[in-house]
Length: 539
Image (cartoon, rainbow, N blue to C red; front, side, top):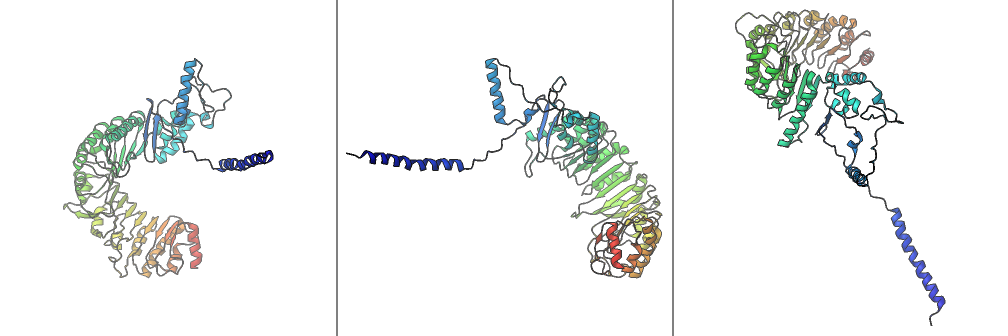
């Protein structure tokens, strides 16, 4: 017979032997780290009262009416399904559905605040104050995307952000297409729907409109904006393409207040723009474009007299462009644009052509810029032909023009020049290594009015520089001279001390690569305090 005691001890042993297994599993369950839950996807509902556009770095959600249940915008899919299930059960049991939660201070359709809720800071601000705050941002950064984001905060902010007074300047960056992908018909429709909505609901007081990096829908966008914006005064297209004659025709028919057209680094139909200038050029005051193979026709059209009230003309090329030659008949341009105040030819080698007539000059010209990064063929004679009669000139930028001499500058009919940029920044092999002379004539002529002077990499003799800087010392002490670039020159410590005295108002001084200065001081100084420390080191 089996011993009862042994049987009982065996059962207890089995029981005791099984307990550690259960406790080990339980301990494993307790110590196991819980799996991280994946974030729930939040989707934006698109209703009849909303226009929603998703971009790479921007989201347009604009509405004239804000939904009463604003918190549903942030509901996940599971929360929506649960809410729908609760609604079905409530309808089946004929029970009153639960009232949805509202943010503190949120008003219902009757305009009252829920009892026991404190209004938030945003809801307490008057609408006029919000508009004033938004306006401070919009003036600097534009309406888009700032106002589009502010309109999503609450009903009050949406109303304030919808004020037409805030939508006077707008810049649209093309963000609907990923890099390297083509535009689908659905994307094109989405883009044009957004543009049309903005034009009809926000752009009634638009003045300045810009497009950046648009390669599609440029003409359609300009047509929609011109038809809905009677006060449009300026358009700017940067790195855009596809602008055709129909867009220029729409601008001429609807935008009669347009006076500034900026097409820099953009591709457009030359004949369409030329036709626009021929018919509506009398209202244009500013034209900016990048020179290309066929774009010389525009300058010829301007020289004929299509824009008699033109005040600003800028023609530039890209830094790596090989087509820098630009034929200019300066006498014809002077007769066609007598009101020109700013004339810029950036990185362009102007080829001056003479018509044989006596130059009439630009009597109102205030700024001339013919700076270039390559060797320029501009001579003293050409410069005199351009500035003939320009007694009001204030800014002269001839950087890179190595053939212009100090004698030629001293003969210019410009008595009150304020800014002279004459530095040489192209290949230094082209610059002559022989010492130059004549700089004292320049500083003596304009020393009493100069505020900025740049003579970088000009190899004037040490005595010439010392005498020239002595004419600038009274101006520096009087607080008129603010910027001085002497980089790469033969300035000496004695000459430099005369212009950076204790009472100097200089805020920028560049003495880098000046071989006659001691080590440790050849650098750029960007404040008066740094310049005073330099004076102590030189002493």
